Image 1 (cartoon, rainbow, N blue to C red):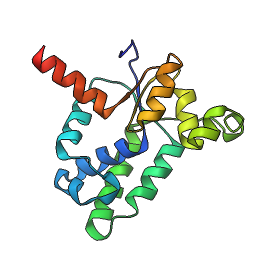
Image 2 (cartoon, rainbow, N blue to C red):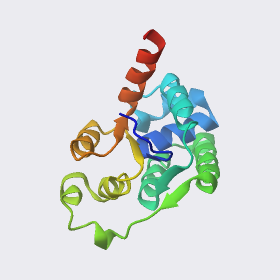
Image 3 (cartoon, one colour):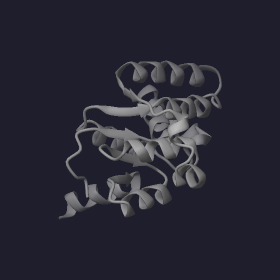
Amino acid sequence: MLGKSSSVLVDSNLLLLLAVGLWNPRAIASQKRLGDLTTDDFEILRAFLSSFNPVVTTAHVLTEVSNLAGAASGQSRAGIFAQLASLCKILDERSIAAVRIVDRMEFQVFGLTDAVLSQLCADTLLLTQDGRLAAHLQNKGMTALTLKDIRALRNQANHG
């Protein structure tokens, strides 16, 4: 299921989880934009990402993460933005012009950011919270996993 990719492309909510967790894991529970994600999810994500180089992003994902992080206030907002700035310095940012994406079916179904991700994951593992996007890409023969998949793989390894 994991293929031979040495790089991983991280979708918006999981990159936000990473930024918040690296800043202050206790802040994860108070970030409404992280929904049901927990400090355990952060630890799973961090451990999983540590085996990949590079960790890839796009300007579209970074824009979404910045917008999501902007919902925080005060010290949390400042800390999350500082951590996001640090991540920007080490992530491998890749781009595809929107004009090359807007005529693709994925744009109509998933929107611009996910359509770009679907193009970039042809040679890179995509890690997303969007089960529908992951299933679509898997059906097209691409490698895409959700955090739920990573949890299941970890549980298999621990019990198998």
